Figure 1 (tube, rainbow, N blue to C red):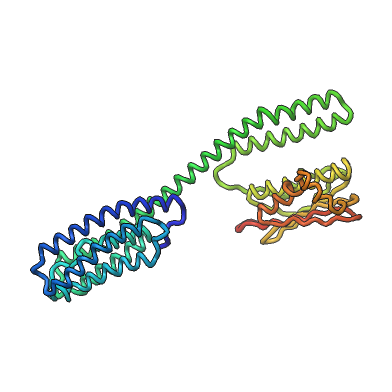
Figure 2: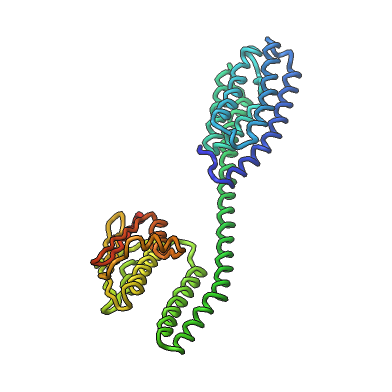
Length: 378
């Protein structure tokens, strides 16, 4: 019986309440007309006028109140249903014990449908049971017509509630699909821009660097690595499956090992993580190793250690370089060089983990801790 929680579901509910506002007016006009036609059935005409006036006033107020989603509170809905029940319960006192039709008649459908629209199946069923139960309990003799009306209240409330919930779910799924399509289109557009610009520049730098030799050859090699990495990322994004998959972190880390340079130590069993998590963790690890190569030396040794726990994975990247001078990272960030902040800390924090840096004369060590999803092997 929970109310809608998404903008699409709220929009569907608002449309239903706009239709219900029109129905309420029709129902109150019908109730007024029938009670005027049956005026000689009332033992207390003054009380009957008050009841009919209350229905008319509440119809106007409810039409205004339900128009704004912020006013559709539990207090409003309970008051709406309580008034309908009270008018049904007041019928014997106003018309006499031998009444045939209740004072509100079909007017109670307004409260019933309001509960169905807001609280869906459970709300419609509860309101229908309450209204039908009170109606039948007041009658000396339950006719087939009376039972049929009560049955329609119960079934109608539940069915309308179910349909309202279905419409809200479909609207939410439609919006999600439209957003996914928009994201895919934007991703394709960005891929074209990257392909037409960045990839071509990297390819040119690689070719010219290799032709010129010397230090520029190393620059060309690095540009080639970045081109292949970026091209692979674009292909992966274009062919990304709709459902999540897992990646064996042990196997992927093994690819980073280089003889005499990078040593990788992992558990003897697979450590599987959701693909997006593993991809970001591997990217952060590569960023740590890139820093070792750039700031310590091309062939400087580095050690990667992976530890797996039931609730998290811990990955450390260590080197034996001179360490990072105090204040260097802060200065780099202030001047716009955000490699550490975005490539390492930013990635890990986005995954809900922590990235801790320990640096000094004996070297630098990054400790990356990322929570694991449920149901993974370890």
